[in-house]
Image (cartoon, rainbow, N blue to C red; front, side):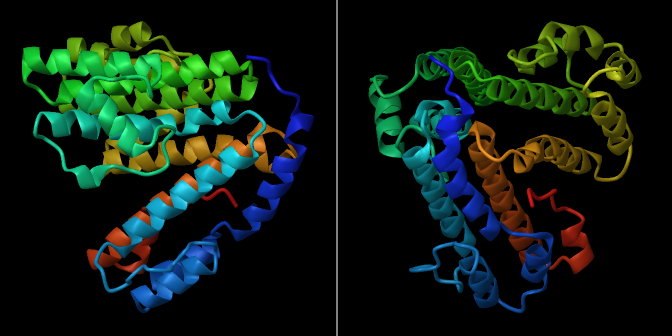
Length: 335
């Protein structure tokens, strides 16, 4: 695939720069936490471009439909203005693979259809048909191979976790495939970071669970800068050796802070938050770029962070958490 010049993104970037003005700020987030009612929350979000029509704030999970509709709208808009639409499927693949997991588990009786998400590169109806009929024309090759392997492995083991492991692996392979094909240094760097951070989180989580090295090696994903074989070789050496091995590289601060957080109460949740913020600091660089694919990618990821923040706030409010407790769980914003 021929790499496009940044100038090809002039029109699309201009459109996105306007939309960035409607992104939630820290002040807006504080208003959401402090809101007296769901009606007030809905009004705040409507003021920032969320379509509140036909949304009933009296429903306990009214925000789920609001977010799913917004996600679908965002990706449809990006696909309507992007000079090279397929490149941005990298950001849609996680949704596709989430839906593939649901479809496969539904076939074996282990998932609810309501768990499907809008905003993937493959419409949910076409994806479900592909899995049910084993007709993979609408899927990428890694998707099709992942589905087949997931069914085969489940038949052998009876363990639904195998479905997640296999499809996660194929998701990262698909993202890496498209990044390399695009010729875009930005997209390749983005995928490298996503895979590496995912593996670092897995390393810490599995060590905490006392999982075996054999299992850890299966969970570690290919496609990043850190070879999964290296991560597996460090697994038995322990967390301190892991930190020392990576402290001089791009992820030195991440693993060092991760090790500290893991030893504190609520360590895994704090690590997840720190990793999200680490990635957002990388994505934020797009704000300084006037035009180019980075601008569109940055906006997409900014919206995904927004969606996550809204869910965290609403879950905290429903659980009766106080202002400071909810605020402490929030992620770094794009603006």
